[in-house]
Amino acid sequence: MKAALGEVWQVVPISLYEKPSELRDWLKFYKPSGGDEYDPAYGIKLIQILSRFLDAQMSNIEAAWGSIDGICVVPSTKGVAPHPLCEVYERTNAGVPLVDVLVRGKGPLRHRFAHRDGFECTSQGAGRRVLLLDDVYTTGATAQSAAYALKAAGYEVPGILTIARRINPAFTPQVRSLWDRCSADDFDFNGKFI
Image (cartoon, rainbow, N blue to C red; front, side, top):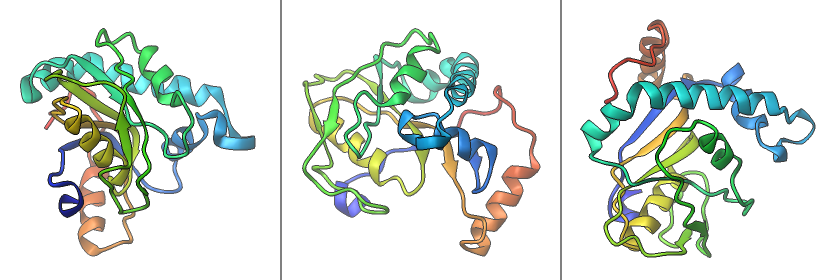
C-alpha cells in the first residue's frame, strides 16, 4: 500500500472479529443494501458501540493525534451515498462535525489494492484535521485510499478509526497468535487507545 500511496495511515480498530460472529453480522446487515438480512436494530448496536468508544476515548484520541476538526466517513466503494455509517456517527452525538467531502473516484479499488484515484475530494481542506471513520477494516485498501484523497486536497489525516478489524485466525500462525492474545482479554471501552 505504501508503494501505491506514498504513505500508510495508522489504524485503530475498536474491536476485532472473525467470520462467523455476531459483530460481523451487525456490520454486514446494518446497511439497507444488506438484502433480506438487513436489520435496522444492528445499526442501533453500532451506534451504541461507537458512542461508548468516543465518550470514553475522545480525549485520548486528541492526546495521541491532536485536535480533530471533523470526522469523515470512508465512502462506499459501490457509490451508495450517503454511506449508512454517516447516520450511525451522527446519532452518537459525539460533538465533532461530520465532514462529507469524499466521493468515489475513477481509480480501481479491490481487496489489497489501494489507488490514488480511488476517491476524490469535493473541497479543499486547508490544514483542517479530519479523522477518517470506517465500519470494517480488512486489508485497508479502501480506507488508505480515502486518506490519500483527503491529504491530496489539503486535509490533515491523523489516523483512521474503524469499528472493527476483520481477522482470519487461520491465515498464519502469527495471526492465530494475535487473535488468541486479543480474544483472551475482556473488552474494555476505557482501555488504552494506542
